[in-house]
Length: 554
Image (cartoon, rainbow, N blue to C red):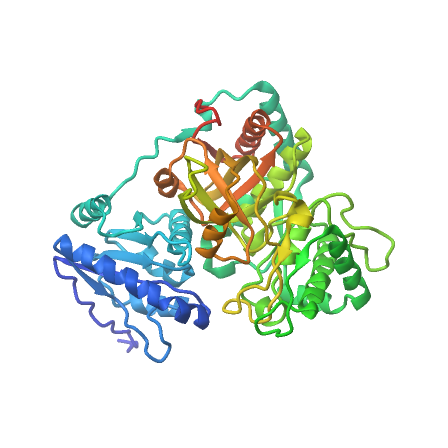
């Protein structure tokens, strides 16, 4: 008989009856993990107390790493090693007080057989809810069953009641009565015909999605499988961030200075300083202007209908942040980009649709939104935001719950009060962006919006759509919200019609949300229905969330 080297696997201790294991996924960047550890530790202590109050013991499945000064799982490999020693049938909680990379723990969660619960704090400064939404969406795409809880205070009676239910039953569900499948909605013939015609055009003429390296920041949910995407008529052009870096180095100072002069003339205020380690410098801005030109030229080289720059991993070590670039690309009124020979203006008179963090779901949504709104004569500029946080208006100006939609990149000046003149550019936080670079900061103008999200679930492309409004808050309230989040980034004060905070959290399948303005409430309703009809004709499962502005159901 042959002698084979059969591997011997160590036995995994079974969890005790009242034990619950806990893991914490973190960032890939050491500085972020170290900065955020104190908030995570405080959240874990509060969660452990809540679990103990229900008669269970919370067991941390991986240790605090004294040499690294944090206790997060900080890589995919580390996550695999941690899960290799967890009883696969044990109750498991993923606790998140900060942004996290979902792929650090996804392999272990896919193979876990016991009940899974994701838990997040409710804080703008420590965005566990953003990280949890991404993880939830990633698990939904992967077909992993899970429950989820969130809250400002883990001593809250409702939170503890739901936690106890999960501990005893292995599952807790939230009401989502605000969700209506599109096939239960009567779409007017004009909007249905438009949506179907746009879908047919896309299927026949096809579009190119330029992706500068996939898989940004561990967002498994943000990658659309090629077969699903291709069925819609959109095909990926896989581009390299190294090519964008090289092309940036080939743009002349004179060309970049022309872009800077254009922006100065439009009225944006650059908040600069002398120290490149902590300030936004003129040299950083000039490099961003070069990257803007480079991105447009590469998009033209490959015939891209839209592009997405990953940036956070890779380019961050080579170039200033891409945020000024992204928001400018997404704006109709933007500096002209000439071809290399100077004979053509690239994408003249239109935005170059850009999706932040290479989120392909946002990219497909952005392309659809652009085409629907262009056909309807509505504003075409659209962007994703993080679902960063939310709170009641402390000034008493607005009675509704007001979300903080906030993202560093892709927000076009057309969305801001005052446009270019209402925008400023501030240095990105050094913790994340060592080489600096400026944002496009401002307050989103009041108006009617359509919000949406493309996601993957059950092996199908899906889309949620809803209506909302951007409200005008006093400056003091805006400053409070910026102080609680990231003050260098553009902010949107959003109200989701007919969707409460907890309904939104129970349903939404991403840390991102796509937003676009319409000229009136009635036109926004029509634009939503046309995009829904387009999505359905593209083969998506489509759902309408909430109500119209007047509270009427769809």
